[in-house]
Image 1 (tube, rainbow, N blue to C red):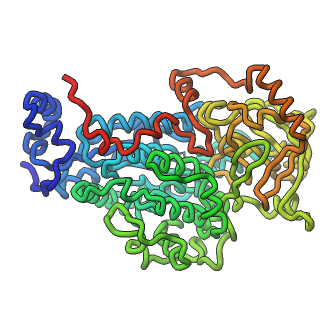
Image 2 (image 1 turned 120 degrees about the horizontal axis):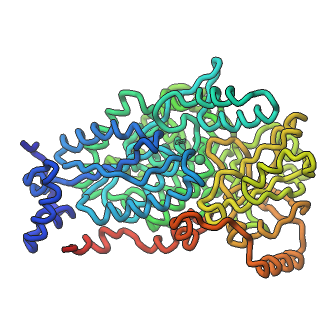
Image 3 (image 1 turned 120 degrees about the vertical axis):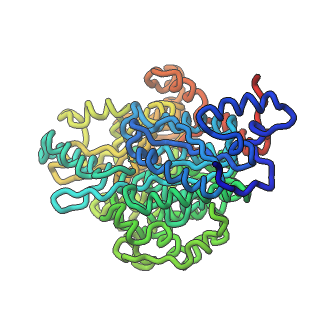
Length: 601
Ligand code: FES
Ligand code: MG
C-alpha cells in the first residue's frame, strides 16, 4: 500500500504525536483522528515526514485559486519523495476584495498559521504564495516557527490586452480613473477596460506587490530557482509544484530551516533585486516584517543603503512596458540575479531551499530578451531604488524614485540651483472618503504648487494601512495637462501604481505623528538629495499645535468595527517597522525553543 520512503535519521516532531512510546494512550488518540480519513498506521508511524500544504487558494481568493489544482502535484511530489502530505486552509486574503483593506489581514493570517504549524504534527510545510499579503503572511509564520519550509508561487496571470496594447492588472485602474476624470471613458467602458487586464487565473501580471514579493521570495532562496515568474496557467507551473513537493521532503531530512536561508545576506540580496525589478513600495514593509520575525536586524535605512543606487533592469508596468509573460520568457528572477551577480551585487554564498547557494543556482542564467530584462549598463532607469525621507512630519517614509516621470521631474525637480528640491502648499485630507468628497470641488484651493496630504490611512488610523496615498490630481488640473501632483501620506499605495508619492510615513497621524499637526495652507519643502521633508514652521508653533492636539484627545479616527480591528490597533507597529504585531516579535524559532506543545487530554 505505502510507498517506500527514506526514514529520517532524526526523530521528527510528528512522531511526538504518532509514535510516542512514553504515552501510548495519547498516541492512540492522535492516530484515531488522523487515520479516520484513510491514512494508514504505516504512513503515520513509519517515520516519514508529515508535510503540511498551507493552502491560500479559495473561491474568496481568486488570485491564489489555482493552488487548489496545484496542490495535487505538490502531493505527488511529497509522496514520491517519501513524505505524507496534509493540506489545510490559511485564512483567505484577497488584495482588492477585502474591506476595509487586506492590510488588516496579513497579521491575522500570520498569527493563525503560527498556531497551525506549531500545534499540529507537521515536520515541514509548502507555503502556497501569490496575492500580495498571502506571501508575507506565510513567510512571517514560517520564520516564527522555524520548521523546514518552501514557498510555491501560484504565478502571474497571462498578459492582459486591450486594442492591441498590453494592459496590466491593477495599473489599468489608476489609468481608468484618470480617463474618467478627464471625461474620456464612461462606466461600461471602465469595466471592460479593467477586465481586459486580467485574462486568466494567477496574480496581477504587473510588477505590483504580488510579482514583487514572489520574485523576492525566490531571490531570498525560499522557493526553487526559476519558479517565481512561471505564469499560473503554464504547464511548467504544475511541474514546479511537483518538484517543490519533492524538495520539501529532502529539506526535512536535511533539517534545512528558514533560519538557515533567511539570513541578513538573503535580505540584502532581496533589497537589491527589488530595485532591479522596479519592485513595490510594499516590499520594505513585508521584508522588514519577515526579518523581524526571523530575528534578523533590517531597517528602513537598509533600503536606501543597499537599494537606492541599483538600476532598474526589468521593463515591466507600472513603470515600464511589459507584463508577466514577457518577464518569464526573458528569464525571470534568475536572469536578474545573474546580471547583478556579474557586478558583484549579490552575496553568492547565501543558501537556498534546494541546498545550493544563490551563486550555484543562478551563475549560468542570462536574459533572453534584452528589452524586457535589460543589461546593467542599459537599464530602464538609473538609481531606481527607494529614497528614505525624514523630517519634522515623520521619522521615516519612502519614495519610489524610479516612478518619477519626466513630466514630474520637469515641473518639480528642474530648478538649476536646487535640482532635487521643491516647495509646495499642503492640501490635507483625512482619509480617502474626505479626499473623494472634496478633490473635484470647484471651491477647493488647489493648484500646480499644491502637495496632496493623505492621513488617517496607517495601520492604526485606517485600520490596516490603506493603499490610498497615490491620489489622482483634481480633474480640473488633469484637463489642463497636469497629470499628477506630489502626494505625501501615512498610508500605503498599490504596487501597481506608478505614482512617485512619499508614503508609508511613520509614525502615522493616528499615533499623533507629525502629519497630524499639519494644516491646509502650510508650506512644505521636499529635498530628495538630503532625504528630508519638512513643514516650514518653527519648533514653537509645532509644540503649540501638538499640545492642542493632545488636549483634543489626539488625532481622531473611526471606531473599530470588528474584534480584530480593535485587537490589532492595540499592538501594531508603524509601517517603517514592518507593521507587525509588536508583542509577537519576541516569539522566535519556537519549534526549537519549546519543542512540541503539551498533550491536551
Ligand atoms: Fe491579488 Fe493583484 S489582487 S495579486
Ligand atoms: Mg494592493
